[in-house]
Amino acid sequence: MPAGSVAEILCAVNEIAPGFTDYVLDEQGALRRHVNLCINDTIVIDKKTLSDRVPDDGTVYIFQALSGG
Image (cartoon, rainbow, N blue to C red; front, side):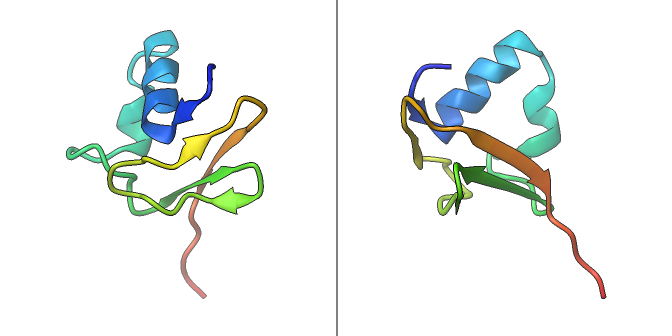
């Protein structure tokens, strides 16, 4: 994917794999409560509009947030 915001990256992935964003984004387009995203080794700050920038050489990691004890 070309560099861009997290939202742009997720949109591009969704074009390749339709329905992908249904798993990670809620109805308003924000990150779902139990999903975390990292760009390289940094957790995404903007979980509502996903405006964090992904550099050309960046990797976006998507993982389930764990809760409980």
